[in-house]
Length: 109
Image 1 (cartoon, rainbow, N blue to C red):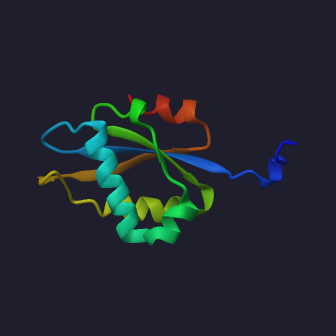
Image 2: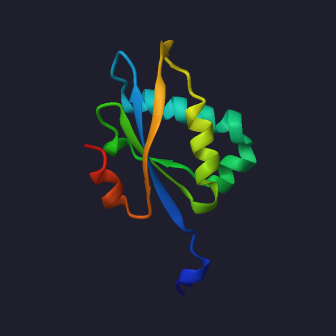
Image 3: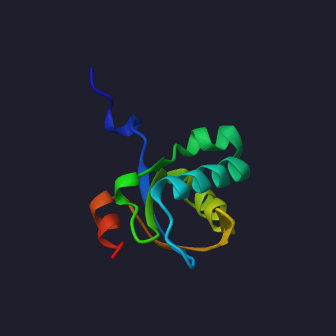
């Protein structure tokens, strides 16, 4: 039996750009993002936001993160508080928010 569409979790795709002097690998970015979300939202908040980091889409210091539609603002707030990745000062900018992955990935270039 399939899940009714009204019971499915609605999602949003957030595209972020990292401004820094060096380029980071996808695993370094993912580690920093997970730590920032854990610090700001806590375990319960992270569980409710259900973030999913797309490693295959992270390139040129840009990445895509899928979150629950109710927690878009909280996740943006958590990510903007990232000040350093691997002891390198960084600045994160939110590029766009989309309900479609293809549209979000198209904004990365």
